[in-house]
Each structure stands twice: as structure tokens, then as C-alpha cells.
Length: 352
Ligand code: AMP
Ligand code: MG
Image 1 (cartoon, rainbow, N blue to C red):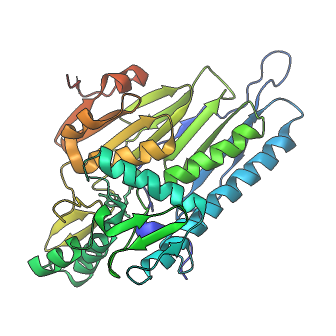
Image 2 (image 1 turned 30 degrees about the vertical axis):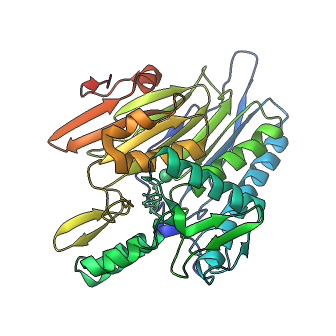
């Protein structure tokens, strides 16, 4: 069993973004008013996390306890859903025979149902049954040659929600080779669960950031909004800054994790319709009410490109970086541009 890594090698060094600030102490004239309690646990879902709770003076231990519970929630989600853990629910499902119902806990079923819904909303671009393709491209990278047509055809024949059935109590695969990969959704789900724990604890505000997938609520220790920097895929200077009263931000990057084959880079995000890695979108940052939605749509838009904007629900906003280092091109939905405090230096092109 490997620990310290997450689904699909996942999330390691996630390009994702995002430095959350506003965690410093507010010290107005009468003494401290709002105090941030911050934990930075390592190794959850293969990445570094920041959890913060904002409390009034004297409430620090309540904040500490809430953060401990939120961290435990993240670890519980990882234990259920990682493909890096042999005894996770998803590994058990992946190892199961055809036509045998695998009992699953309600949390795992909830994520699988959300994933199935996302598959419909994204016209198949977001597909957690894509694991056979993810594994094929990983093997291709290791041996250094592109997959053959036959290999691609084999893998594609086991991908799609026609191959997996959900019931109230579990899931049934229609072929033994069907495999699920929650690397594009479970981190967002975990962030949402951890935020629920913090909100229920009664702290004044909080933030959970797992490798750049983050969600915040309530008041920051200072200022009216949480501030989130959007990392630039082509350089060190941030692309811009978001002022977020509450909500989630996720970034997916086609160049952030890749395999190199015959001198060309191939993304870890696969277009499940063609079987080939998605290569048109260097980075996309999504703002949504929940981290699950932001996680789903950042992965989906990496596959769909600008055409995906038309499929997004109205409460989801995105900024997409296209082009290359020498000729970047930024597309941004109107909702996203309203949240930008410091706009990107490059021109914004708002799609109609
Ligand atoms: P993210 O970093 O959230 O964009 O998720 C990328 C991860 O999701 C990959 O490493 C795979 O584990 C998985 N994945 C790759 N392609 C897809 C896809 N088209 N739909 C859903 N999950 C995917
Ligand atoms: Mg994702």
C-alpha cells in the first residue's frame, strides 16, 4: 500500500494555484478581534494542505478542535476513495469481477452519483470511468512509445457510464476491466466535507485548501473577502487576484502533470471520447459554490476547451489560459471577471 499519493498519482504539485491570504491577525486598537488558527498538514491526498479557522479571542481551542476534525474528515475521504490504497472502496470496486454488486458506503456512492451527473452535464468530457485510459497512457509513458490503435480501442471499450451501474447500496461493473478514477473529483468532495465540519463548529470563518483546491466561508481574519491568487501557468507572477466572499476555487493544468513520449508531452487529463490526452488548455481556474463543482468543471474544461463555457451552470465561473508562453490568450466568463481584483495583464476576452 502506498501512502502519500492520491488517485492517479494525483494532485502532486497540483499546478493549482492558489495562495490564500487574509489569514493574518487583525489587531485593532482595543487588542486582537479576529484570530486565525491555521494547520498545514502534509500528505493528505498526496499534497500539502492549509486549514484555517477564524475565531474571536479566547476561542482558539475551539478553532484547534474544529481544524482537527476537518483534517480527519479529509483523511477519511482519502481512505475511501484513493486508488493508491489497495483497501479503499474504489480499489475494491476496481478489482471486482463483472456483474457482481460491490457494496459501497453512502459517501462513495454520493461521489459516484455526482460523477455520473457531471458526465451528462459535460457531454462525456468528465468521466471517472476513464481509468483504463489513464493507466494505458501511464504505461505508454513508462515504455516511451505511443499506445497502439488496438490498445486504445481495448481501453475505450471499457470506458463510459454504460459500463457501470449504481444502485442504492453499491455498484456493478459490466466488465472486469472497468475501472474508476476519482482523481478529478474526490479532492473537491473532501474539501466540501471538511468545510461542512468547520461551518458546523460555529467558527466565524474558515478555509480549506488541499493542494490548491480550496473553499472558504464566513469572515477572514482581516478585510471583507478572502483573497486568492490565480497562478500563471507560464510564469511566476500570478495571473490575477480574486476577492471571494465565500465559495470554491480549483485549477486544472494540462501541462502540470504529464508524460513525455517520443519528445512530446501528454497531459494526465484524458479526453474520454477519443482516448487521447487533452492538450488544448494549459490551465483553467474555476470558481463555484462547492469545491466538488469547481473540481469537476476545471477538469472538464481542460478537455472541452472554450466550447465548454456554454455547458456550465450559471453559478460556475471560469478563466481559461490558452496559447503558449510567448503568445498567451485568456478567456474569462463575465462572472469570473467580476471577482477579479487585479486583472490579468493580458487582455480579457469575454465570450458572448
Ligand atoms: P484534476 O487535477 O482535478 O484536473 O484531475 C485530473 C485527474 O483526474 C487525473 O490525474 C485522472 O486521475 C483523472 N482524470 C483524467 N481525465 C479525466 C476525465 N476526462 N474525467 C474525469 N477524471 C479524469
Ligand atoms: Mg478536477
